[in-house]
Picture (cartoon, rainbow, N blue to C red):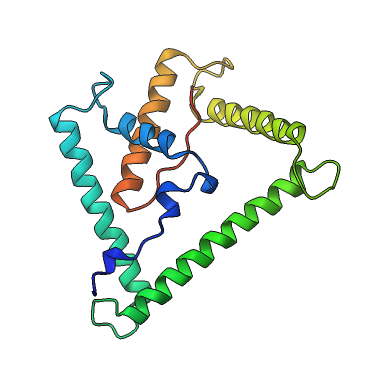
Length: 179
């Protein structure tokens, strides 16, 4: 089969170790398309999501073809497909290892090469404080150190549009801190 869209990285969709849990990513996508904020997607919102997913899949497919179609025939041969999957897997493993090393360098206080529960909790607290500071820096327009309802709405709208744009680009939605 020469369908390049079959080359994919399953961990980008379902691997919790690659970042956030799939159910949170799913909720973020639903929130991004729930324009009337009624908690569900109406027909128009579902259509918008479906259209953006089609656009995103095509963008992803084009990137894969561009990167791995060595004979420029617009299709991936079995050899090209295998090379693409190998490359995607290697990149995923390299990202995973880099994050592991960064976590250890930052939070492995006893130097044993593993994060204890206390070290993991310290990392969570650090990241929570960091995310809150980023939220305030980006969205606290009046500089009072708190997010008003209007500022929270602006933050949610910004995150929703960023999520929709990443989907249209065939990329994985980014984690946005909850508020």
